[in-house]
Length: 282
Length: 282
Image 1 (cartoon, each protein chain N blue to C red):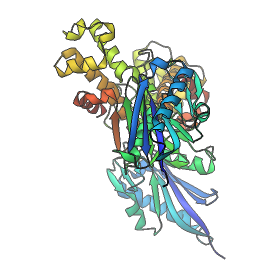
Image 2: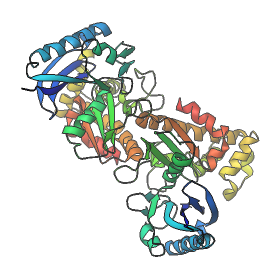
Image 3: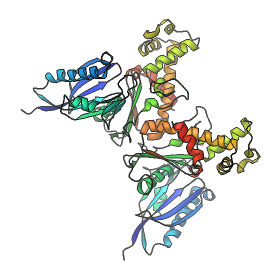
Image 4: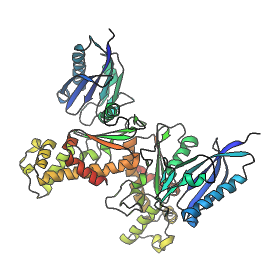
């Protein structure tokens, strides 16, 4: 019997790398993950990625034929199929297509993580049937993916949708990209932690977050305290939504989308982030 | 002999309305203009527009066949072929297609003035052969037109490219659109006049502009004084370029174009506006 075609999709995140084998209908057959940070060096990371793909495919190859690999990665360039100076990984410029084609003789597609999310929504998710929408991923950083006339927008150089590096505050917070005041230094998982630190040091608002030491002060912790009614934590979400909402309003003025979808850890905070974002968009 | 096809294009500006009869090759056969402001009421304006089209066509109709009308107008909606609450004209919502089809049984195309400029550049101008570029018109206001994958971007609701109403300054200058701090209240012909007034009232910089009374303080006057080396006038261009450049950097992060083209009265100031714009983009 003829084998069924599958592709493997890998999402290279700042913390985790997640893989899934997927059919043409969007059914995910198996999933695996490993810590990106444990394989910090480029060579080690891709050795592990190749191994994980092989391990997953071993279970499937009697019935399925691997016909392609899709990668979502920070600073992924669609045209060059490369990862270029990702801010949170010391990789420099990596020709991902070249590396993977040494082990797999199939086409490679690569784009940034938010673009990959946007493609997913377009084909199988909330964006199905829509022609013009925006995806914003609120993880450690902030990513953007723009669908225009039913297709992902790559732009001239493959870097469209870099919404995290829109300037929000002139001479604002230092960003890992080298610039100051980038949106993602305010509206992201790492941004909300910086906001909390500033409020702890620079205000007299009472908060149980004041007792939380350095590395324990995470966006998850801020979320939990905000849910419990902590005023400082709530203010963190208010300021994060202000940054996100006011910048989304500008993006709407540029591309006039039908919808904006928020994804990622911080988006899971629900009303806490959605309400202030909506307020400042209007 | 068969007649040659022509279309008439009309650019409805805040000050002047300009008409041209154009062949398929982009050759303009005749041009005329009238003051928009003299025909401020909708009915009067369109009566004059119909008359001007008829007058121009009378000279051509022995040899040419009118096959379409194209309109560039402030707040022009491509999908609805309407002009909707233009900030500088008390028109409300005008169904332009319906009005013009009473007199001319040809297809009507309508979009905002910057989009119309972008189409012109795409077909006949500097954007020929480019797939992704942005046009910014610096007239009384600031308009934007985005070409994406070789086609004008209209967005979901027909209002993509409204770059003039990106927020530049939180709680900044009052805009005619109702919002505060819109880019066009800083980076436009009217914006640079407001900047000059603020500098005259709020600084002690010596300037020959201090002697210029109310309505004589125009962007043209500021340009002339800047060319003559007037420090306050030069500062006006610096601040205008700062607003324009920093916002263009954000737009580049969203759509990643190959080129940005500046048009309109203020763009004719050349280096005076281009140099600070470039500086603040980087």
